[in-house]
Amino acid sequence: MITVIFFRYKYAVEYVLLRLKMKMKNYKELRQEYTYDAFISYSHTDSGWVKKFHDVVKSMGFELCLDAKDFIAGNGIAENVINAIDSSRTGIFIITHDFLKSTWGLSEIEMTRMHAFQKEREDMVIIVVRDKIKVNDMPEILKSMWFKITCIQWPNDDNLPYNTKEIFYEKMKMYLKMKEETTLQNNNRI
Image (cartoon, rainbow, N blue to C red; front, side, top):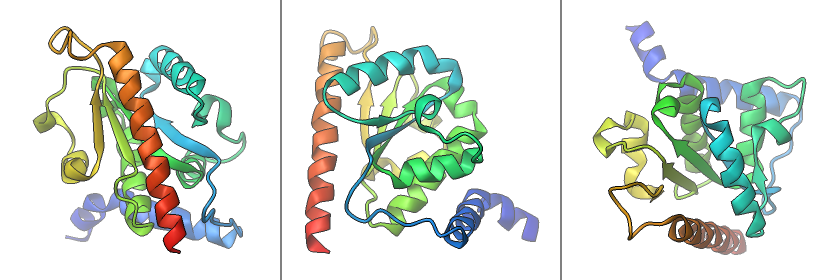
């Protein structure tokens, strides 16, 4: 019974333990300012596509956290992920079949969900569905958040001409600006 409970809440337990560890190391929380507009979570098999995505979104004036360039050498992966989530206004998850097979990907979604809940920012997630994946095939954690997150479909043969790369990036720009405005409004209430 305890084993079943542990596996059900494994990511939540890991997140809480990492938070405690970071608190003991005297990490300071960022209250109103964010280093990044978004943290990008993806499967490393998609790194070529993600690099192009990063460059296009960065050229729009957004600062993005990407593990390859922004993670601190010597820190554990989980610690770097939590720092990236804390330092980012938004989490962007590039959903592909490979991402859904990744344990780290699901762990990053859970950490972001816990962070968003804790900070009362449950709308901080943007999902980019790159492959043809139905909502029913998404992991339970994403389905449980589905109506609180922003989802953008990468253009494919099924949704052309209504969804082109230009339209996709315009939507991304609009959603990132909306997240920025929401964060500023929330901070003004504090």
